Image (cartoon, rainbow, N blue to C red; front, top):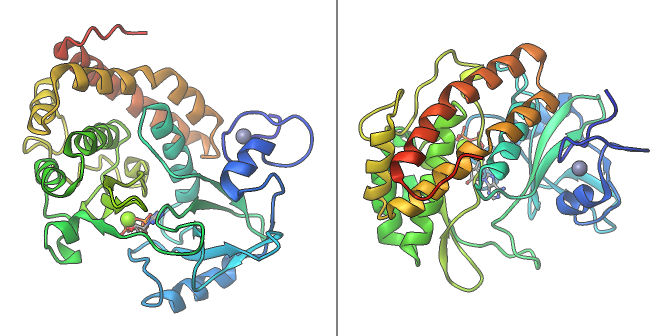
Length: 319
Ligand SMILES: Nc1ncnc2c1ncn2[C@@H]1O[C@H](COP(=O)(O)OP(=O)(O)OP(=O)(O)O)[C@@H](O)[C@H]1O
Ligand SMILES: [Mg+2]
Ligand SMILES: [Zn+2]
């Protein structure tokens, strides 16, 4: 196979591992920085960072940033504009999994921050995302996850439901219907992609520089089903963690305050992403056996999404 772009996964003609436009989208410049990071050292750095940055969670992640001349990407304890997630010890291929799932999200109409893979000095791939809670001048935007909004402790992050999220959005977002549509897309997408880890800390509202509280771009999306056999939804929809039915999707849409037409369009967009999604999975950096499993899952669940879209009767036409 010819070289695949570490951002968009399409072929690259010529030198390097990024298209110029993809490098610009991720690094802010067509020049790809030198990656001054290596897996062995990151384990120690990640441990030292616990409690020193606003990053929480279980998977190792490290705050990284570009040097002032933009030539080098390296660890940045403060004011890093990026989050890096290297290969994990226990679960295989998480960076590749998160990366392709973010590409799928984009194809399905879920808003995501700039992201891609980077090759560390030891040759291993790591997942890199640009922080959406930073302003250009290094300031920090207010980000509140749904655990905080629901006044729950971090360890209660699994003690929620999709409906609780809809209520939090209604109460706290400046434009509740816009945020509710974003939430609906994210929940449908999490189910479609076998993501059993979309819990209350993996959803946030972000206060923009304009003071508007919006649903933040999606983050921490991955197909946990590839590493945890038959993983269930972390946040039940209509009390259901596994086989959510078309009827239950429409009930949830209605709970979100969406018209059938709006729900149908969102569902239709997810279903229409099946073909591009299968191509992306095939081109991804996942091992072959995970690619096959991911493709099967997407195909299996697309039918329900399509049935829900039709039931919504939105004038949705399968394409
Ligand atoms: N692109 C981003 N911009 C700003 N903040 C982000 C971004 N991605 C993630 N975060 C924040 O960093 C936190 C940790 O990131 P993430 O959820 O991806 O890691 P994680 O270790 O897999 O988390 P967990 O195991 O708790 O689910 C998130 O809860 C979120 O608050
Ligand atoms: Mg998380
Ligand atoms: Zn590209």
